[in-house]
Image (cartoon, rainbow, N blue to C red):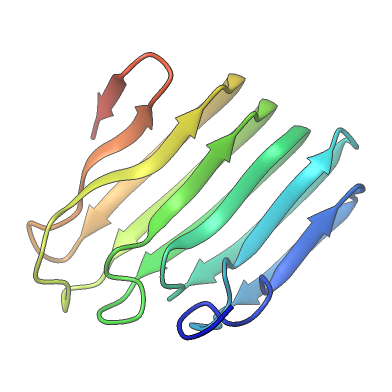
Length: 153
């Protein structure tokens, strides 16, 4: 892959899982801070910070049985001004508790969605924080593309 996103994800969990605690994945050239794919292994994430990735901070593709506690995403400008906090594709039985989705004050354009989900079910969000030091936080905290449902901040 040439140009931007030329590296693998900062943390890539494929066909497995486990316990992940206290991780910071700030690599602006990585495809994502965290990519979880093709796994049904029950797993837990505690206090992860995924920041400054160009398009996706975290991705859960064909993944299920995850609990994510105290995830922080941060969209910077220029590294991440157009990024999504969470990308869910075919994701099931996932919990996000104490999710912090932050856009820094250097962002000058609005961003429509923080979380985008498609073909996903039984995904729970508890205690969600969608914020910025300016008026340019994400317009929608969650967008379910399958049913065209938007959850406002």
